[in-house]
Image 1 (cartoon, rainbow, N blue to C red):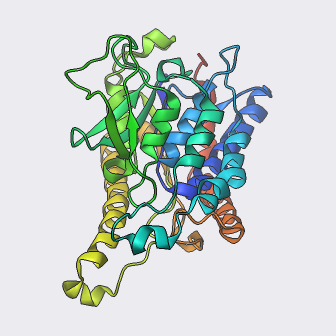
Image 2 (cartoon, one colour):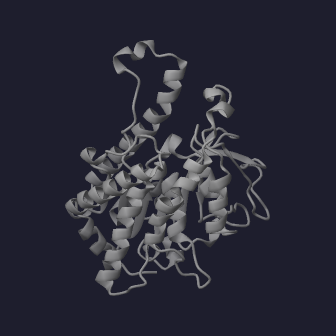
Image 3 (cartoon, rainbow, N blue to C red):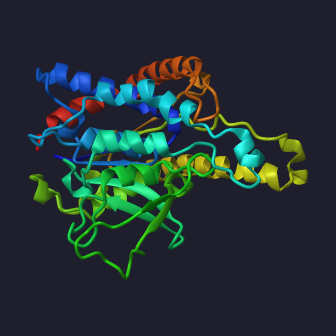
Length: 356
């Protein structure tokens, strides 16, 4: 049975090097196995969902060139982190004396550089112009609710610049200031969206966006994209979910947690919540696919950094040369782990599907 092909990419800051490494391998194998040197990620997935750094990757993979073909290669997506990581984080760090140790302003980095990069990368590209259906998570503080940027909506009612979408989904609390974003549709849905959204990183509720991707697919008519599916069931899906190796953060002395003060909790809760949601969603996806027939259970593949390969800095903004080397090594180890879990077989299943 033919299936809808879905890619879901976790959040994780500079650790985006890990999923970018996996997807570089996937693209190279697609080219090798199909003997098509121009094959791209966008050609072999029908829906891509991402949170934070995964949202950035999603938009890079789906950005079109002037011929409406994929503009960037998976290698260029990986190079985005190795080449621009220092510009995003190291060169953008706000001096401690300006933050008064985080008591009056907890924002650690200026958003000027990352906004400039998104402007360079995506110019005035709109969500509706992405090559395939796409879902990017964010949390809108103006309405105090989660929000999903999608490319499936009516662009006359709801439309956003991709540069604003990537800025929104990567606005991690204490790292970057919230993003102020406007619906640029000619006839916006004013009863649902405020004039200006105030958005933060979607990782606060969906650092692993695979369940969001599943829900979006269940409500998507893929026949409009040349596929034979309208609102497909789990048994009609092929899902690749890639993590960024969370759980490596440090907590104050746990045995004394009953004596933690406000600052200790404030520093720990975001990490605990974001990391916990990753494991929860992975469990839920396994449960869903575990109810299917044996031949369909392998159609969901979750790849994350093995525990013994998490030797990089716990700070997801550490773009130092030393940490980049460690992250590249972690990406290589994760790739080996993914291959041992059946990544090559999964790529074969992608190829068995017709491209559209």
